[in-house]
Image (cartoon, rainbow, N blue to C red; front, side):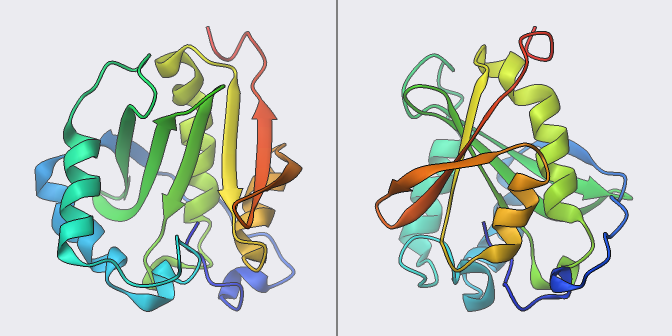
Length: 178
């Protein structure tokens, strides 16, 4: 959840959702992700807030590319969000107990354009069926108001706190997950 709370998304009007599509993350997408993972503005609300070193980037992207069976705890699928065939964000999903955890990364040049919301919308249209799970969760730094708004506008509810992060849950109706 990497959108800075002081970004243009703080404005009081809703940004129209840009048309985008999600494509599976590939090895050729690692440099795009690495640029975000080494930008302190993007990682401010991720983990301990530090930029990621090359070893962490390699570990996380290797896991994302592993293609583990989706019923396995920790199995992940990452997607690149494309707008007019240009990458504008990364949407991640990971099998957790008892459902699927989602997250999203948007580079600063695309903040305030509705990219995070469009990725969540697209992900909610595919992730429940992909993982065969109606339970979708996200964890957000309590100071990341922009990311919390992205989720609550899409029906997520704050359901507690774990490891210093607010937990948001959304149960997808069964008809959407089949």
